[in-house]
Length: 130
Image: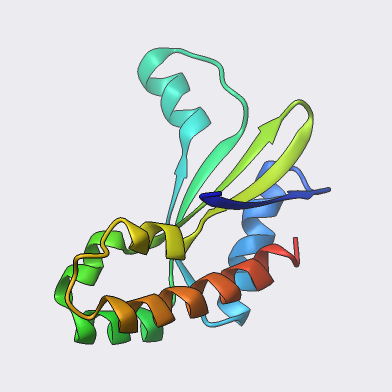
């Protein structure tokens, strides 16, 4: 599976707020939040369920990865989506280990793999708080 997905009792907007705070507490930061519903409404006049894309980063892990290979930035930052589906809210992580798997030819892959495992474990921990 490419994802780690959990359901939360929060609505999507509240889940994004809580997730942002929980990430911060665990040494992660949210670089951007893309409100897909708003964009689709403004650009295409389409109504869509709540859907947010978060670009998240742990600066320490990112720096370590870039020291190993500057092309590690091709798979940064990590992605989390928060969305509503059939009246339920879900939080879904694109697993860093899967993202790195697409870059297995990079020099330093083994060291990068260890960082991806660490990042994934940390993000799963935060998602489980939702």
